[in-house]
Image 1 (cartoon, helix red, strand yellow):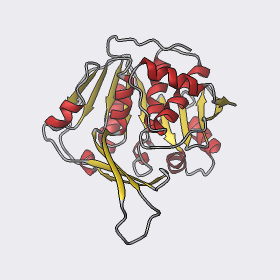
Image 2 (cartoon, rainbow, N blue to C red):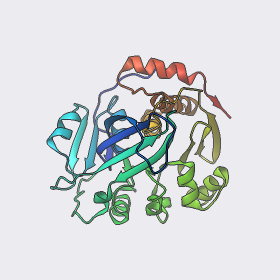
Image 3 (cartoon, rainbow, N blue to C red):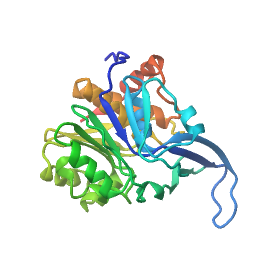
Image 4 (spheres, rainbow, N blue to C red):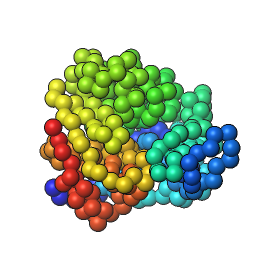
Length: 301
């Protein structure tokens, strides 16, 4: 498969979080209740932002979030990514990801309550025939209000964000076109301890929905048009799992919008997630060639 870099009118609207992610990795085995030395780096993150940034490699994206600082604005400046304020006040928020000394994700800490507070958020844009990607950081009322407003004329895509926030879409499944979850989020949403049973539970509520469920390095499962596919990712050395699921989602949404074959959508999307987990990031066509090589190692059942 060849993916061409296309710069065209905006077909994508993203709504959600943008803030700093602080990535901490233990130097040694953890000693509880004591100070532990770490390696540290930070990057700009947020689920919707991560998805928007990847799609903006190919297409123009409008991204709606809380007001950001001048520093963040300069660092996120891009000709294909337009950031639009939902509020007039800049509020501090951040996420901390802690990994063990072997780079395995250990704990995430989110100081992001500000997204859910009553801030008089304004989303008055009239949109049609677009992919609208929403993470679950904003309040349930705000998220559901947007979905109800736009669902009839657009593709609604939900990136689940957290087991603590998945309840926000429980009563509105019928209005979602594409849903990205990890295994724990699926269990929380459906109260089913089995991935396939949980997926079928959602399909019973909305048989037109496309569902992608990730299960770490084990596999990913996609349900599309009442067919279920299991995808085995390639074996890689994991360097940073933070954002890998967002990369998978961003690539899959883009490829779906371009009507690629399902086989290629699955292989390239899973490969892209693995590429990010290995510590890399998609920036240009050369990176796509590396992802294509990874995709050859992926098995679909």
